[in-house]
Each structure stands twice: as C-alpha cells, then as structure tokens.
Length: 351
Image (cartoon, rainbow, N blue to C red):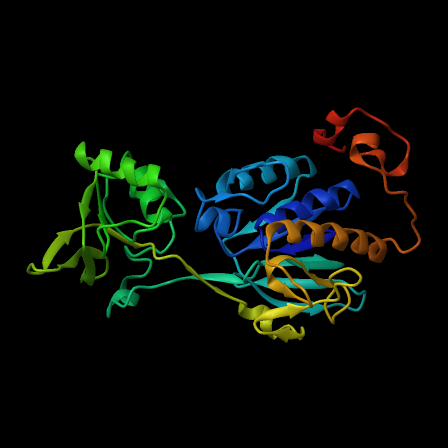
C-alpha cells in the first residue's frame, strides 16, 4: 500500500505543480498517470509545441515546460505510479481514500486531487481489421522501452510530432525504420520534418507517402504490414514491429463512476472556495474540472492547484495555524517563520 498526504491523479503540468505547492506546506505527494511518463499531453502529444502564456516565459516548448516542472518539484521527492490508470476509489472509516489502479496497485491518502487534464488517454487505433490480434505481439501504440526495438525492423504510421520524433529516435537503434503517412505533408514541428528528410536522404529512414497500412501479417507475432499507396498496387513490408501513432483520445474513464457530479464530461467543483468536488476530500483541478467562467489554460490549473493545497492543508491539520509568506522572503521553509533564507532556498530540499 502506497501512503501519502495528497494523491494526485494525473501527472500533467497541473499535477506536477501541485507537488511544488504541497511541498511548500510540507505535504508529500504521489502521482498516478496512465501514460508511461510525466507531462500529460505536453509530453505525449506535442512535446515540441511552443506555449506562449506561461508567466515569465515569452515562449517555451511543452516538453521543456514538463522538464522544468519536474526539476522544480523534485526537491520534494514525489512518488509516481506510471503506466497505470486509477480505477476505483473507496472511502475508509478514518476518512482517508484508497485508490486502486487497473493493475491492482493500491494508494491511500486523506486527500485526492484529480488533475487528469481532459481525462485518461487511450490510443487512437487505425481501422485495420486484424490489429487487435497483434496487440502486444508486435503492435504497440506507445513506446515505453526503446531498447526493445534495437536491431529490429520497425514501421511507424502517423504524421504528427510523436511519429516524427520516434522515427528520428529509433533511427539509431532499430535495424530499419519505415515511416508511413497518408499525406505528403506532416503536422509536426518543422525541424522534425527537416530531420526526417535528412535521415531519409542519408538512408537511415524509409519514408512512404501518401500511403496507409491496411493489414498486418503474421501468426503469433507481426511479420509484415500491407501498405496501400494511391495509384500503385499494394505492397508487403517485412517488419518486426508496427507502431501506429495517431494521438490519444481523452476520456474521463473510470473517474466518471466515482460518485462525482459531472457536467459535459467534466467534474463540477466549488470555485468560490477551493475546487473541491461534491465529495469532501476529493478535489478536481485543471482541465478536468468545470465551473462558471472556467478557462482551460495551464495558467488557471496552476492557480487552482495553489488554492487546493491550502485547503488540503487545513483538512489534514485542522488545528494547525500557519502564516503564509512569500518564498522570496522565507525560502521554502519560511512558512513557520523560523527560517529566512535568500531566494535560492526555493530550490533546496526540505529534510
């Protein structure tokens, strides 16, 4: 059983910033995310997409924002359960909650903060009739362990950042990389498109456009894919792995069955106070929540996380009183007024 002060469901930007705000109050956090790495959409869907509305950064790439948030919160040593989806929640007699994932991992905390963005993500699967027969037998919708493709023949389908970035990355690992896209134009970052073209010219990547994978060949494992190209006969490409990267479909998922008040696939919260749901002790912050005047911005998620942590502290320690101080005045340990350090204290770990 994993025990913590605040259990955060969702390791996107809002969830990661919650760790920092909770850490200032000396509250420990553990995060659950269905994706194999932190960052949510910023890491999985558009790591190279520039973001322009983060205070202090005229422009920052989504992937860099994730890296910065991880660096900011690592001093508070958060725990992570990645690649698992929060499935059920049970309230205990002592008022705490036990959240169990789809893989049976149990977590216990007095506070649950749902920061799941638009919900849990499921891969968008291409309409290939026999693709389900080869899932985990050579068909993967996400790349969790790049080393499993070393010296293997890989076909990737897609035209966005994920397809481009993984084609580039695997070019130095796999025996061969073939990128198949139904259009000649790509939706990803221009520098990634240029890099793929360079690797193609160098013979390190095979690019097949405009084409689609129509069928998968093999018995107990993928041995090839059937590629349809406009104006040409279908061809068979021998591969060991087929990785369709068509993005992720956001869904509220099992959280919708937790007895929370839902409105248009979002969780209703009390924004006048602390972004708490209709179930005391369960909060919803970031894009997953809704209230009058809601704006789905990362900036708003940061604000909601800050207010939520203040409320969570009061719930956990109803008899404790503290004086809020700026971190530039008191450092990260300055909330109790016993220690005043230079601004550098913000990045020092609390022992």
